[in-house]
Length: 424
Image (tube, rainbow, N blue to C red; front, side, top):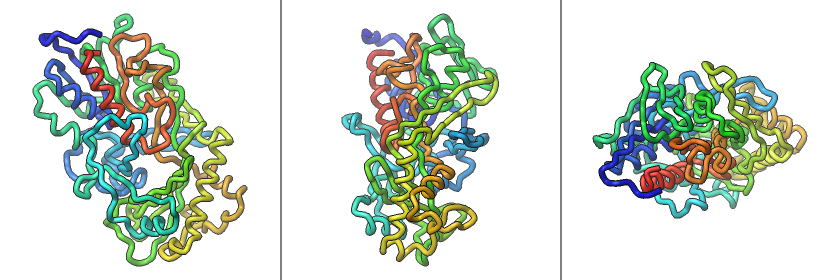
């Protein structure tokens, strides 16, 4: 498209103030010809350090969605899925592991990246036990966790062309032909705009599009997560509760093992989290009831490749626990809340597989429900519609084989730069 005249103002409505939405709103509002409104369903938790307890183990319920996301795994009962709620999104609760996407290597970003220096008892033992273990690089500033909202959005709040509205979930989009005309919030307020950027995440973005009657094929299809299992460990005396939850990781190609140095409300305990990073199982998000919650069918381990991969990841953890450095710091390792010892499955692949299938969870990296090339073009424009854009983890063609934190930020940097340059 041709560049805009300096006199023209473009009104952007950014839906979702999570990882990508904070970046998009900040970058678009750098151009004074843009008027930007950011709508976030959750609250503003304010600036300052975020308690560091690592992913789903975070002891900070006010930062989780109050209703939770409810998912159905393959053959399983509905269960809550932790997601961040408020400005900053899942960066409020994630382990803050920063793994860049090689395909976006040239895309710069503002996140402060630091190598973990305080490794903790469990992290140090894993580093000694496995030659493939590496200290983690984390999104931190002077040793403290920060969120994307802290880095990108808060420095932008004094701009006169940026308005941030919290506690305002968008429930539907109103169409006029092939254009989006308005967005409606749960409290009945309507927002008009020239451009709409949906950054609500891999569950809520497709749910919003489906609830609004969009008919682009593929919306909600392709859902993936990295399946994982956790083994809880009781640590010996001297465990470092001030160490970051994640300080070390073991990259085994298709598999990742992450030691968690500490668990909330459980001093002296940690965990090993092992999972599959190249995933073939595919689920979906649908909206059976237009006024109800989305149906999230995760369908993890629905392929033999993923079952075998998770079995191997659990085997990796069991072998790691049997090393001398780990035996020196781990008093006990058990498989469930009943204290079932790991010895009950060690050395028996069938038992390892059965336990892994029964206890599968994930790294909480949902993605791929509005895939680029299927639902959008390479610039995030929804196919079949003129002024509707997407920027979040739903765009990934498949779950990236790494933590998606940094790749999502780099994606948002890339797309917002293009949108600014050509006006959409």
